[in-house]
Length: 227
Image 1 (cartoon, one colour):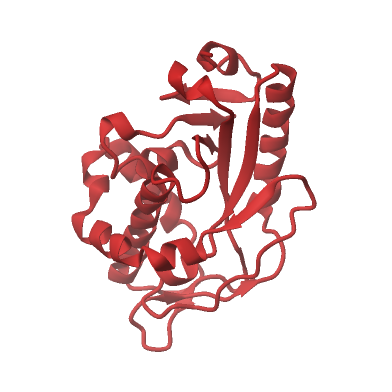
Image 2 (tube, rainbow, N blue to C red):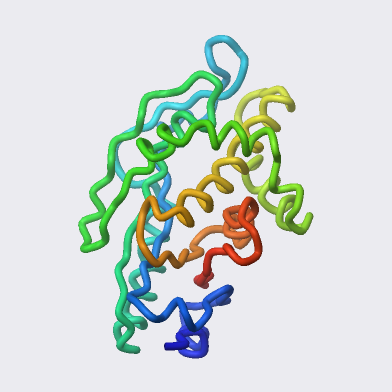
């Protein structure tokens, strides 16, 4: 079934990409990402001043609550359309080893108090860390439209404030995040999370572009960008 013309009309949907008819031959496995909650002091220099560090705490951050509301609205419309689906949240616990030169403590898995399955990506990323290193060096984000790279660079840079952090450390942190996005796409396409993946874009639209950055055009993951 071709779900593209159906889903693109949902009130909560901004844009639909790469959702081809053959994808609808089996249940759609919707995925979205949620981030760990940071301690109130946020990002800081690590003890060796070689990069950033952070402390994660238990609970849900503000962005998770907002994302869940978007997802719940989408699920309501999907059910109303009679589309067969699964829904999973990937918890970005592997940020603890990807974003920082000195790994930090792994964040605790949140309880979303919903029927949405939560999957930690820590072990999967840990088992594929060689691919993270390869992508970090190959810089696949240089192949995507520059406007998305600039958009995400400025967005991520805005998270680091309140203290004087050297620009080279900020730059390295952002490139680690870009690498993490690209690795997301590789791992999802490889089937590490679900069988028939469709990404729900609930962050900046630049994120999903970077998640497809390391994939060939034929491998691009379908994306439903929510309003």
